[in-house]
Length: 91
Image (spheres, rainbow, N blue to C red):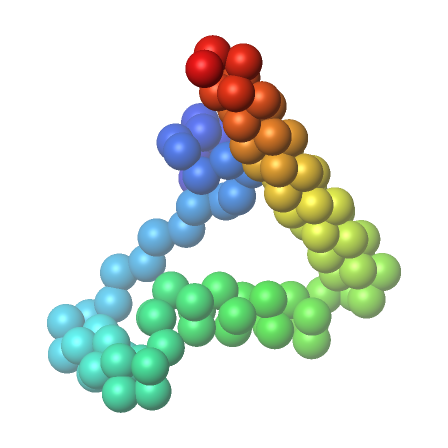
């Protein structure tokens, strides 16, 4: 994995290649269930980590991720508020 950021913020970008027919079957089953394949895979990875990583390490990583997400949300809110303020000043 490259450490270069490519538009995914602080998230890690993983890519997998599936054999053609099993890949099609997986996508078909996900579609029938109304689930995005990437969402299912992400949830499967998180569940694997929760069940297999030492609890202390998993909770530390999860808490850091949650804090990072809250920071992203706060930055968005502040950015929107600033944009709104600037737009009212310009008028």
